[in-house]
Image (cartoon, rainbow, N blue to C red; front, top):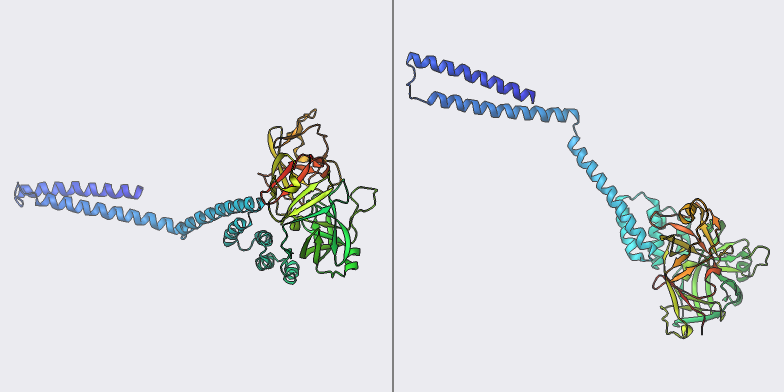
Length: 433
């Protein structure tokens, strides 16, 4: 602006000099007194010089800007583009996680693929895409994303498993007895041998004791690790159950993990089961656990209240749940008017309910514990014991899904419990027949 001001000052000085010269020439009679030709020329030249001065100023400013940062405008566009990409990536991830937790796997894959187009080096995204693909029975897609996530051993394992969890008969329901009244343990058949397996919503995959594996001739695959709802890590080897019969259902090609020794459900008690049915299998059906009549019903379709095995029972509560990427059921409840989620683990052998130490002050305050009820829909769990445990670091927790603790099998044992994966709810019925 200083440069522009100097130029204008010079133009004003030149104009005043020419006015004096014009007056002198008039005196000499060189111009007619009424002639305005000279004044027009002066005005024209002043306008031209003014425009030239402005152009020079703009050129100087542009030159100074470019000499300071040659790629300033290009960088500004790039920074804006990067900022918008980060915002898009964050938004797509949030939508993808929400869909995956709600078991809407096609929608989850769409948003995670959008994320992948913006961040192709993110191995975690590839792992999430592999999980969503497996839930949709897209084995090839899962194998591709496992390779992208550098899970080479797991990818090779699934290359050998053709049509996992294939149900070979056309029956819609299967019923089998409960072998243990405290836990949902059921009999099943593998290669002509009968074993007791625990229906465990706290395990993401099925588990088989190595002694059972040897008895039925299962081959060990690549080594693997399983993280349970309590944070414990189990080392083992991957394998496939060629055919598993539970009730009248025959399920083929069931991925499983072979481990050295299963721990008993209760400390000091003998082990009462030989394996575990995890949520990768359970989530493909709807499971009714009836503790009073000591039976379990497995259905391919959603169970309605008028069904034979629910006749005479009244629906007491319908509790929405989320299905985490780790394969855990997170039941939605409220405590102290705050929304909170609890891991529902039918194989949890501790207290009926344990709270997450992280939220102790939020739930119960800093001083005397508040004796309020834990609410699941219309059902209130009263006389809560203040039992706290540290949530394992291996369990991922999202800010919008606070995990308040773990619900054990005993908390709902006085109800008929329906794990309704079709509607993504846990339904509690009374025990009247």
